[in-house]
Length: 281
Image (cartoon, rainbow, N blue to C red; front, top):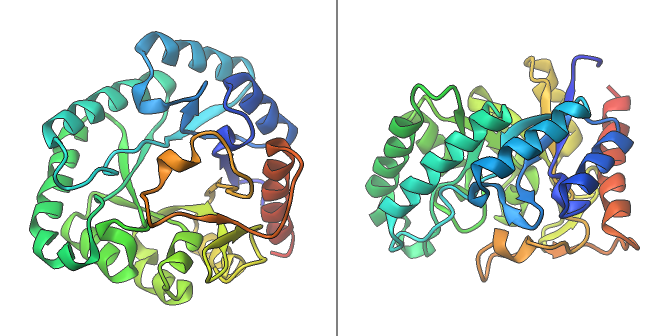
């Protein structure tokens, strides 16, 4: 198991980068999926700030595995050209930070508009890929509530249409969409590049991995069996700065019935939950 690389959304431990570094070192992680940087989404920071963060990570032997961006988390009627500029900036930051991956999404829309918007979604994802081509940064689509790629079947549609897109598999998000995570894994595993380790109950409450209905242990085992080694811990076990900005109204997560005194404690519990699962394999 020494080859396994564990990362985390460490902004759930602390919004300040220094606190995130402390949390990663405390839990023996390899680095982070960088999302919140001193209270600002990574896509919105300056080049100078990115250089500052890179130095801090390098000095502590940590890496930025992936950009936890909000690319694709806009509504279909929002300014798409402006969003493309955000993508270009985020790719520039990724290269400064040394991140080889960029987590992204497939647009918010009402359920009744999914079929009508399919071609436009695919065209927009194609434009994302055109812009990313040659940058050395892989675009990685995550299943998420309220977007086109909320269900396994629509994620499959995306990956078949755009084979250059890589997949991020989040069990909790599938549970919250009423999906059977084992069926979702069977459909999508050829396209999955890495996992988000998060678990949930069918009432949308997020719980420590292995305590919910996401079949996290079985999916981790299957992922390792196919040679996968990279996993990002996404706790969501305690309210933290920026959570509201990550989700659309009407498609929000609820914190489960596990209570923690601090965000650091909740972060450590999430890390230990995955380590407990790995210890059984």
